[in-house]
Length: 516
Image 1 (tube, one colour):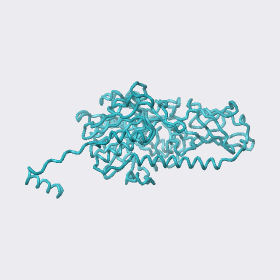
Image 2 (spheres, helix red, strand yellow):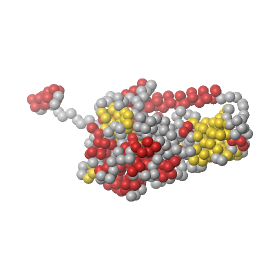
Image 3 (cartoon, one colour):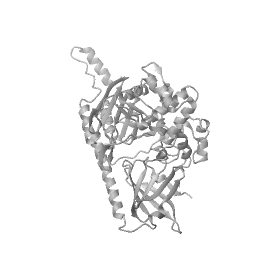
Image 4 (cartoon, one colour):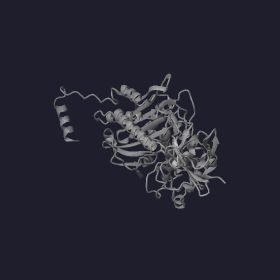
């Protein structure tokens, strides 16, 4: 007990009639509702659902705003959202159950459970462990292979078999690079162990024991769903939800905030359900919250965001780990087209905070950090203004990049071949087939595995074209041809134009060559 505590006790004993017990601090900021509604307005986000778990109790589970622009139906605690990469913690917990049962070790080789699993590097294939699947240290690049599952027709086995064609960019286990496809493999390890699909296992082993009645392991439309919203040519609009069942173990779960709070309660109680039954042991809980892969720390130039710069940052098993104001935080974000979220845990404070939104801005972070500051007794910091400043800086930078590109664009000019000379069938070693066809005086690009990827090519300069995708939630890209000495295209490569394009649009990893 500190000296101050001893003095306080002594005074209380000496003069009990004069000392009243201090009122317990409110678990939530008094202005929270107004703060959240203002943040939604600032970030042009129609709605959000927020939950707070403290000391084993759900002290808040509430909806704000609208499920869909132009529709008065409100978001409530029962409105379902896609939680995207917050699904990864469920996959890690599912595997933890098999560790508890003695049927799996974190450092088992993947090929011992999936004999057909292969990576580009034979050494990595031979040594790759289940722990490696969960901790983003494969040696592959950021988001490697995401186009294999994003709106594609590929199944899980074919995605993973094609994945072996992607070359690493660093040595195995030497660097952090976030990857979704390896969580697809983790889900397949669980399926191999359990003799059932990942979907069935997560329902039977997690959703049902926790009473998460609203949860589905993949997208399933219902009247209680929040509609995703995204900027389309600069205007926020309702958009179709992503339905990428093949990547469910990485990003598939859909759930309401009330049921997700039940999941957070179990995480904070080290696997216990209501203090009695367990879905995983305390030992597994510690392992999931143990740092494995260090993450780079990049200080921000935004002064108002500097309090978020951590002293340490790492990835555990399905969770990002960092410090904030002297406490250890386990957290994760999730993002699919038109929907974003964050789940944040402070295990030592028995505190969990959830923010689910049907937009693409950082409103969820403005909400999360506001509540956390209050819980830690910190002075008010306007996180809405801070993330607004960061957003505006990002938009300004993107506009400057676009302006530089436009200034460098050559006036006039023609491609070195007639459009028909570029047309034909092309193939990328890992992604698959694409077709270029001349239609109505312009080239049209179609990615065969992904029917939504249809783009009209506009000549830019030299042998580079701008791809304007007809589905406007896909960021525009440059496409550049290599022409051989005989005047034939031998390759085309691509890259996203805007620096704001999500890393999952990894066009820069593609290299298409003509199909004979």
